[in-house]
Length: 287
Image 1 (tube, one colour):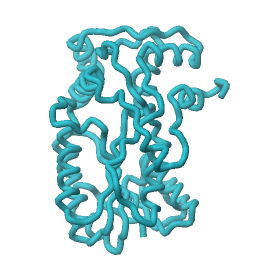
Image 2 (spheres, helix red, strand yellow; image 1 turned 45 degrees about the vertical axis):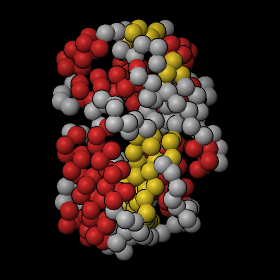
Image 3 (tube, rainbow, N blue to C red; image 1 turned 180 degrees about the vertical axis):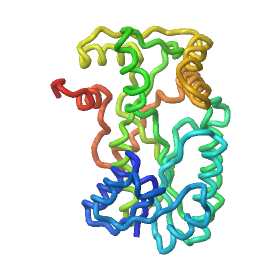
C-alpha cells in the first residue's frame, strides 16, 4: 500500500489523484478532516496524522509499503524537526520505501534558508537503512507566477536581485507526475533525480513571456539585495524575508539554472516549459 502525506495540499493531492486513477492501493494522510474535502471525494482511505506528533505518524504508517513524503514548509527549525519525525516514525513502522521531495539546491556551500533542512532530511534517509528515492526539485514555476509575476503586474517591473541568472522552472503538476511514477514503480530506487524544467530562462525572457501572456508590458529590473530584503520585511513576516532573499542569492549563484534529463526518464515525456505553464495558468489566454 502507498501512503501519500500532505494529501490535502496541492502536490500531495495531485499525486494521490494520479495513483488512485491508475488503480493503485493508495491512502491519504492529512492533519485533520476539516480541510480534506477533495481527499474524501477521491474515495481513498484516510489516515489522520501530524508531522509534529510522532505517535500519530507511527499509527498512520502501520502496514505502509511505500511512502510519498511531501516536504513540510515554514520555520526552518520546525520543518527540520517535522522531517525527522516522519523519517524516524517510518523507520520504526517498517515502511519499505520512501519517495521524498527534496530540492536541487543541496550544496553545503549554499546560503539558502532551507538548504540545511533538506540536507538533514537526506542524511537521515541515507542513515535509515531502508530504501529511499530523492526527487530534487528545481524552482517551482508556480512560485515564480504567484510571488513575482502576479504582484509585478501593478508596476510592470519584476524587481529582483538575480543579476543575469537563469532558472529551469518545473510545475507542481509535473513534480506530482514524477512522484507518482516513482511510487508506482515495481522497483523504485535510483537517483537522486533532478527534476527540472526543459529550458533555462533568463528573467528578461520570463518577463517577455509574461508580457505576451498577461497582455501587459512587464520588464525585469535587477535590484540590490538590501533593497529587496527591505521590501520583503515591509510585506511579509518571518521567516519569509530571509527565505526569499537567500533564495534569490542562490539563484544568482546559478544553483537553479541547470537543466536535467531526469524528468523525461521518469515520466517518458519532456516537462512542461514555462511559457506553456503560464498559458494554462492565466484564464482567458490562448493555449
